[in-house]
Image 1 (cartoon, rainbow, N blue to C red):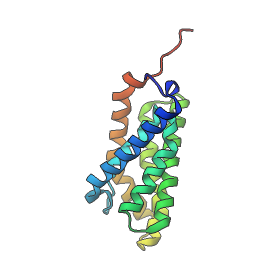
Image 2: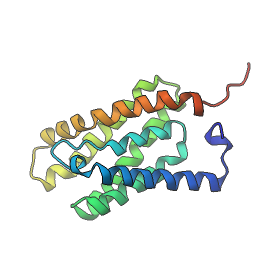
Image 3: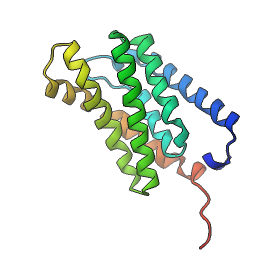
Image 4: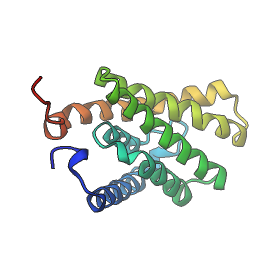
Length: 166
């Protein structure tokens, strides 16, 4: 299987389920620092997989929904907010790929979309000013963003679509 276009529906569903499970397992293993003052969610590095597999936009949003249901403490708002943020982040990564922009730009949505998006409701729940909360979340997303870029570059050889000769 060289690229996402060669996968049938069953393969896409199976791969999506494995990525969702991996996201939840990674978040569970790193939960001690995934929900702190600086939320370093290594699992969000998996958003970078949508660079090669655009069909992961919805499954990764669902993964965030499930993880916030299992590990978050702010109920349905946090679950839905995480789902929307996950889908928006991965959609931005798909956009970067389709526009053939530099793969380093994958780091930008991994930092900014969760950092600025989640801060909109967490700042309310935690009674913190939005700029403080947003900067804290963005700082926490720097490591996952770097890991995401490294992952894209490492997987490029395996999942790069075959280019047609012009």
